[in-house]
Image (cartoon, rainbow, N blue to C red; front, top):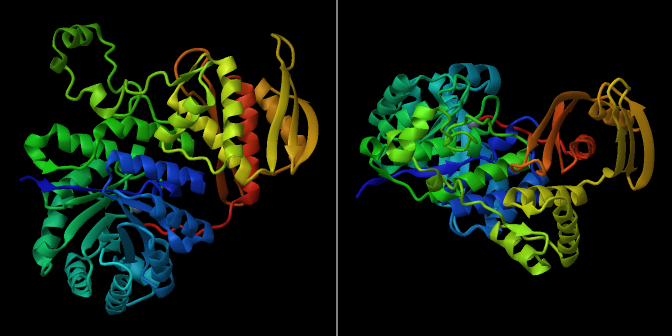
Amino acid sequence: MADRLYIFDTTLRDGEQSPGAAMTREEKIRIARQLERLGVDIIEAGFAAASPGDFESIRAIAEVIKDSTVCSLARANENDIRRAGEAIRPAASGRIHTFIATSPIHMEKKLRMSPDQVIEAAVRAVRLAREYTDDVEFSAEDALRSEPEFLCRVFDAVIQAGARTINVPDTVGYAIPELCGQFFRRLIEGTPNSDQVIWSAHCHNDLGMAVANSLAAVMAGARQVECTINGLGERAGNAALEEIVMAVKTRRDVFDLSLRIDTTQIVAASKLVSTVTSYPVQPNKAVVGANAFAHESGIHQDGVLKHRETYEIMRAEDVGWKANKLTLGKLSGRNAFRTRLKELGIELESEEALNLAFARFKELADKKSEIFDEDLHALVSAETSGTEREHYKFVSLSTRTETGELPYAEIVFADHGVERRSHSTGSGPVDATFKAIEAVVKSESELQLYSVNAITSGTDSQGDVTVRLARDGRIVNGQGADTDIIAASAKAYLSALSKLNSDEERAHPQV
Ligand SMILES: [Zn+2]
């Protein structure tokens, strides 16, 4: 039988550390449910000690997920490990992932600890974690820039203390595939009892080689890969789950490893993460990009029509393209709506929330004849984020544009429950709308990104707008969806302003 390759997804922890990608608890649960359907072995649900909100999210995920292991990150200190242990307590299968830096630059400049002190702290952390669960993972932060001899000593000590998974992260995205493979071989050979643990790769994409480095580690003996949906993550991101999985599946001749992943759930997972985090997927992205299976060149089209395998190494349906067709229409009732939400892993908290969402669905169905899963995700995200942090809420908008005239916008929105009316001119209707909002709010934030994407195809599709605002070093993404892109822009701007006002400060460890 082929060896098993474990897929460890960290979209909810490392992925969430992307600028502005913070998710609500409801959104995290929805993504966790999709990851479970996808067949991910381990879901890293967050970093419990970061904030009470993070702790609660991990705990909520641990309560509902049954088929995947639920993991919390913890620095190698007592408080972090106890918080992680408490957060994963309800899980059917729970893991604590603890880490400490091992590179000379990190030990000296950041931790101000000697190598022996680092080993001592690592061992203490693993032992304490074992009081909560048998499933303990240890990471040597910045491993790829650490001394291999020292790493072998650290790993020997933590294996003796009870760690079952040894993760070797390329925290700064510095590795090169061939050297990464050699590095793993050296560690596996040099660490006593290395056959008693699962070796794991966690690669960042700063040089665009995260997937290549992870696969090189797998060829050298790693049997767990840490990755994220769409390659989301700190800076240039992490290794993309969909690329790792499809590479291993498509090149079974090279890897000969078995996976638990149901690949037909990949596209649904990609779209969900993209919608929730407001990070669009580039069209030419491998596997999940809109063009990944489109053949433009006439010669290719001809070849594919005659015999698919002339130019296609994977089938679009194998990763879930085409599966997501028309979901609901104008005449769909409340029950059909509720059933579809349930199938998508969305459970609204109360009948009242369901009624509100259903009313919005009807409104949308009036404007747009066909409603797709992506529309439902956008609708529910707007609904739940609206109730959780309702500082500013869109009410109505009127805009006027005419060639040769100055664009004008008049907006009504709720400001902590009080209705405000404002108007402004601008270089375009979106600019006029934002200026009208700012005339009241005076947020003193900086607009860092504005983007519009169509949620589905067709000119009646909803525009999905992302607005990224920064103030005093804090970055948030706001999102709005509407068939009118100016209204979607106003909603996105108000949502970003609400987040700027309410998001709690959190620690963001880098592994
Ligand atoms: Zn990382």
